[in-house]
Structures are given as C-alpha cells and as structure tokens.
Image (cartoon, rainbow, N blue to C red; front, side, top):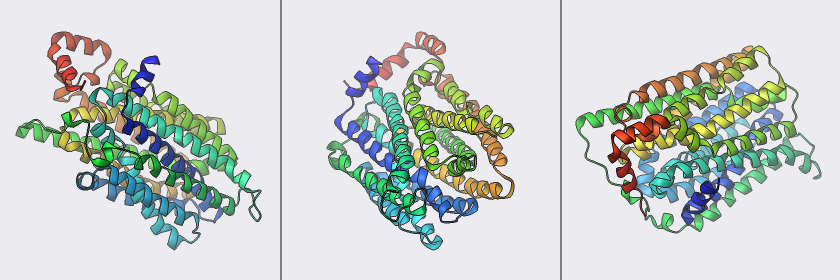
Length: 443
C-alpha cells in the first residue's frame, strides 16, 4: 500500500486534477443513474418506456463515441472532456424539469452525447498524459475513483429524497422529491468543470507522454493483425453490452419490486460503488499475478454463478450480492483490459479503439435495453438475467482465446499478459524485452 501511495503522489498535477474532475462528474452521474429511472417510474412510465429512453441515450453515446478518435485529434482531449461535461449538465437540467415523453427522448439523446465524452475519454487521456510506467496504476485509480463517485452519488440519491421532503409541497418518494435530487446531481456535475479549468499542460496541448506518439513502421501483416485485434476487442465490448444492457438499466427498479425503498436502493448502489472502489485498486496486483488475460477471464466470469442463483432463488439478499459482484468485476476488468490493448495496438489506433469499443458497447446496450424492457414486461426478470450470464461468458471466452494466441503474447512481447511465473521465464529467455520497457519509461 505504501508503494501504491508513493506512486499516486508521483502523478502529475494534471493527472490529479483529472481524477478530481472524474470524481465530481461521476458523483453527478451516480445520482442520475440511481434516481432517474425511479423518477420515470413515479411519472407512470413502465419498464418498456424506460428501456426506450435508455436505448435512445445509448444510441447517441454510440454515435458520438465512434467519432471520438477524429474529435480528439481535431479538438484535443481537454476541449472534448470540458465540452462533454457542459453538454451533459445542460441535458440533465432539462431532464430533471421534464415530465413528457416527447421532451425526455431528445434530452436523453443529448445526455448520451455528453456521457460519451465523459466516459470514453478516460483511457485516451491517461494513455496520452500519464507516463508509461504509471499507466496501470493511473487507470486503476481512475476506475476506482469512478466507483467511489458512484458510491457517493448513490448515497446522495438514496438519502436526499427523504431530506428534501422537508421542503414545502415535496413528498418523500414522489416525483417532486426525485426531481429535486436530480437538480442537486446536476449542480455537482457542473462543478467538475472547475478542476478542468485549472489544468496546465493538458489545456495547452503539450503531451508528457510524447514517447508513445510516434508509430513504428508497420508491415502489411502487422496492419492486418492490428485490424483483427481492433475488431475482436470491439466485438468483446459489444457482447458484454448485450448482457449488461438487459439488466443494469432496470436493476434499481428490480430492487424496488423486491420491496426496497429509494433509500435502500441508494445504500445498495453505494455499497457496490465502495466495493468496486476498494477492489479496483487491486486490479494491477491481480494482473501482475495472473497476467492480464487470465485476470480478465476470472473477473468477467465472476458474476455468472450469482445471477444463475438469482434466477433459481430470487431474493433481496442474493440480488444485492449479485450487484456487488458485478460492480466489482467492472472496476477491476476495465483498467486491466484497457491497459493491455494499449500495449498490443500501435499508437495511431489507440484513440479510435476506445471510441469504437464505446460505440459497440452503447449500440449493444441500446438493443439489449429495448429487448430487456420488453422481456421484463412480458415474462419477468429471469430471461434478462440468463442473457447476462450467456453474453458475459461469451465475451470472456472470446477475449481469452483470441488474445491468448496473439503473436505478440506468444512471443513474450507483451509481458503483462502472462502469469507471473511465465513472465519470469520469458524475461530470463529474452532479457531485451525488459530492457526495452525500462527505456520507454521517462526519468
């Protein structure tokens, strides 16, 4: 832990400001994520309509994310992130003040545009601005901060409706109470602009990670391999989204159907965020021990038996545990596989890959949320839970089997992909790999 703290203190000022921005922006999103569907539910929208609004939002995210690489190259990471926060904040303000479906639909799309910039730019930002030797820790801290923000957002969202009921004309658990909480979350989101405005080199567009800017000349075979890698990585994201999109948009409503109150749901989401924040910090250690490929396989598959159990024994306790496991697996897996693909792909593909994966994720999510909402209305929650387990296993298997046979992995050129014992043998057999990596790290 002491070593980890020292590494955190070694982050640049702009990286620390980015983490603070991420905390504030994601607290606002955590409030929105918890409360908005409950707000719609109190406005007499059912799961099929909620799924439609979610699909509209995620389709807008997908379209924006796909063009992320071009936008980052044209405007830079700072302008894209700051613009995304402003767009998302304005959309959330409109959503909090709207009760008609014809207004909620386009505002959901606008919110999706802003969310694409907020969520998809995390890894491109860290790859561009963090030192090579700090990327694993920086990405783990960033995703843990996001999880911690979700915890705080859920706590605010769970407790605030009761507190705000003290206001004249506001009843606890009513649409008015939920609207007031959404406005509080919007204010917190706008506060995320403050640390962005205090950045230095990032605002001026002077990368500190310039050693990664230039690409090594690629042969035709290397280019074909890179295209295959990109397609598989994006496809894995789409598979994960098909599973998650059937469940996540409706999970707070599902807990409602099991007898939970808004306060209870808030505490459950807060607990999930806290577990993810703490466990996410161990992602680099798990990756070093198992290798990034085995680590992703284990973590991505962890929720499958719990959701199968939830189908057989639908109880509140198991539902809470399933949520905790899913949140933790997300916080641990994303920094591991994102850092891995940044090592495998040449630099010119890196901004595009996260945009395309986010696009595939959001496209899959939109389709799955539509299907999930319909399935829930027609036949309950068991079919979406089954879909989650099937697609989660498929994503983990495709990722492990394809990249496990990758030429760079088999040649030992990506040591982080290997378990500790195999990495040691590879280093002994080819010490130049370790030397090359050390020379890439500045200072």
